[in-house]
Length: 336
Image (tube, rainbow, N blue to C red):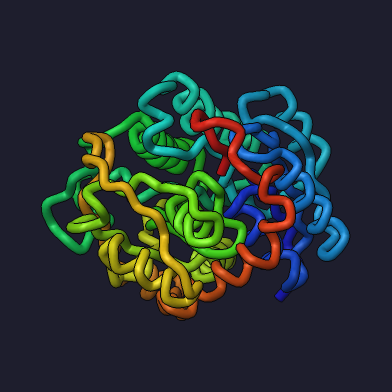
């Protein structure tokens, strides 16, 4: 396969870094873009970017997707065969407190990327969306043509808006736009605000974590980050017209069982405090991945026990010595 020139936005983040490295490792020429948002340790993300450069030759530009002029100049100066757009503000509950930021970055920032790509002659965009767009869907598993017009928080609303914008750009300008809806991704480089990381931290350091309804009756389609990255690479290789595709494992697990599984591989116990589930959180997520299998040849391979063990090994090997510097700055905003 010929080498492609690919722009990966959010390349120093959790999923973005894994996708960028997977592409570079197979021979693609990858340029990363990240604004190094300070929600969690900027030093952590800069170390990731430095390691990517040293090991894979990935250059990282420090640029915000809200900067239309910077994006325009970038696409004027370089040619890209595809854009993998993961840069975003994540965090369901944080979006309730600062909805304007999520619209600025996740929706308007996506439009800036699409405009720059179109002007620069790049007609292939793979976009990171979210299972949160399904809201409190009554039917399970979630299928891509389910109604997604009742988001529970601004984060999901902005992501759904970006999906719809992608369709308009496909229809009007011929842009090939694939939106991948992600389901509870976990694994090495987990963001420290995410539940999987917080469980590991509680087991190791004895910190108390709040768990909605004690984890009972709260089901999530936990999906290992390497499987998700494989889905992105496949979407790069299979340009479609306009498609929305679930990237999950298709086997939801109750949160309490997920905690117990991580406790088993770690040989310790998390300190859990049960609190009521807020209205902005979903009760369950469950991906129907038939479309991903058919269109992309996607097949998640990492089971929950294997994935939990990999997460725990990474946590022990890469975060404990610098735990203080890797902790979240404050519970407000997070980059993808």
